[in-house]
Length: 296
Image (cartoon, rainbow, N blue to C red; front, side, top):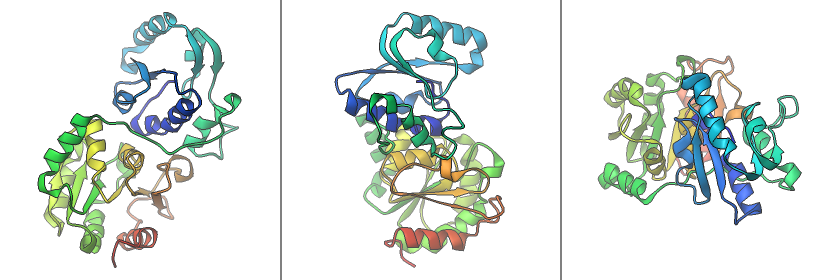
């Protein structure tokens, strides 16, 4: 498999689980990139994890090809690229579904459709596997809050047009404050400025974890949250994969194809495609209707 960013990587984990159920004795080698590889590092049926560093250009591709050519596989599946299968030695090869054939499918379903020639027709929920040390990290960071009602937030995204205003997050959280004891802020170091602004206006205690944890530590923290609310980013996919109820906010984008996959994953998109037009009251109403335990 060839995988790129974090959200894309998480959306391929239903395929991993389906393959494992079909071939329980098999180990699965994965090709990932430097950002996404940690998502798979604790998978119990992982064989080898190969890394394609796109920044290394053709030299990086050539190095990967040389490594892969040394392997002999029973089955090779490419969910992302159009070239890697040509260089893999395998008894059987399966490529990704074409864009035309999968245009009306969610991305997780499109990936899973590549397995249909094997007689695999289900699309399990997403999954992230974590180590015991990651859970210990989360317990230590949350300290006395670990068993309390935590609302996790992702204030950032990979470009400005997908980011809900911090002021909207503040209004939303203050509207929901009666159902939570603390707010957990997650993201990278670039989100720290937004986190500082948010903390000044939030009515609840704030646990500031932006830029302080790696991917699997972040997943372990999300495991403690009663609800995650965030922009269209990898964090929403991670939250859903950890079984946390997840609310994703869309302005631009295509939620029917790229929203977090799972039965406890909700989403809301503005009518004009801008994040600013998505009102906190509408988001709060959606959350209360979807998860009735969140009080008015």
